Image (tube, rainbow, N blue to C red; front, side, top):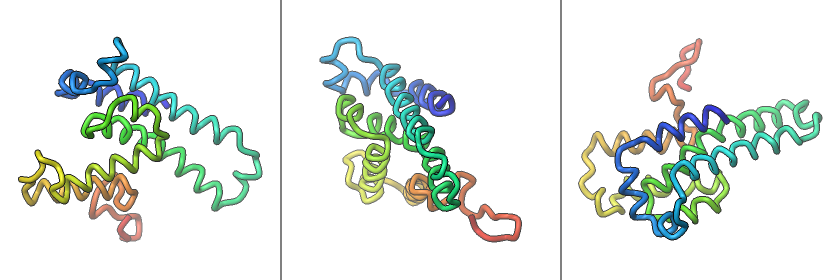
Length: 162
């Protein structure tokens, strides 16, 4: 949860945040709702994921397949939290709508936003150059878990692609 909060706070300091807040009708109407409030809510969502895992019976952790799934789910919470924030920041969706969505749904919605950009579906994205398209496609692959954070070409100890 601390890692997620730290990453979200770093994202909240990126250029363009004030402009994004001004474009958000929900943030304007709710008077005083801040990016810090969004960060806090998303961090709380991560805490809920961990709380659900801690509440599971011990038997769930004895089965290797189920254990692996639960560990991956916990680790993905940080990625999904980041996606939820970026969906609001880069998307055309209100903070209120983002706040209502579970982490996993927000993560998938953010991937859809990126896929639309890749296809040239956004007005500002019609002129994506080859390298920009490649970077965007790589980001989508990372978010889907197809490519590790280390990137394309990363190998394990016996030379296999990760």
